[in-house]
Length: 134
Image (cartoon, rainbow, N blue to C red; front, side, top):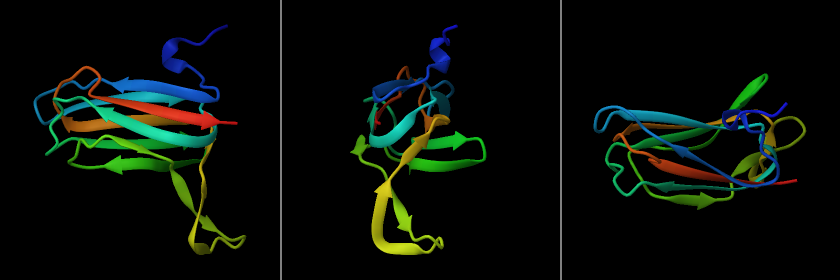
């Protein structure tokens, strides 16, 4: 049995979702999802629509899985395109942060939710690309 496109399980590689927003100017919202992404998160990038209002548009990208969640990216009141390698602060075996040390993010196969708010009603208001490696 195959999954519908809205429940696609992502394998290693680069995948994209477009967030289409609906609502009134400067208050439109939209959500898109990556389902089942696993592996090392090698790159996260976003390309805003040229008409998205920079003074109000917000984006939040959160991974959730059974028993937990973490924010991968968040930005308020800006439509600056982004492209980076996300990392997490490292900790020792007691959970104490190691100053200035970072590690790669391992995706757990949960759901990555991309939420845009306070924008205008736009098709593909934000296109997010996610690259994973095994």
